[in-house]
Length: 116
Image 1 (cartoon, rainbow, N blue to C red):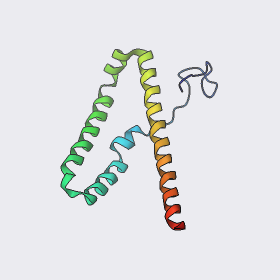
Image 2 (spheres, helix red, strand yellow):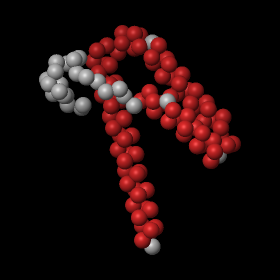
Image 3 (cartoon, rainbow, N blue to C red):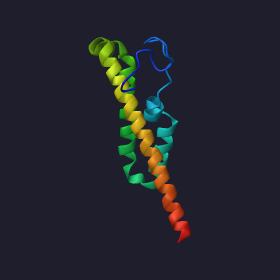
């Protein structure tokens, strides 16, 4: 992703590669966010308004991006869109690695508690 091959990942020309649907939209505005909002409201119901505002802001940001994609295409150009695509891919990789490491740390702490 950072240093792309001339023939692309699967050997196809640039622009013909199959893309996997990114996790960004479901992560920002999908069922997982609603489940997280319910869980957070259950743990601390005094901050429900803060979490609702954050959810609405995420929905609004994704709506603006999806509705005005032609403007972003004109402003950023081909190279700018490629750079943003790679940056967002790296952000998703960082989130997934952090979630994986958190899961391992949680598992190790549970094993440590079970041994004692």
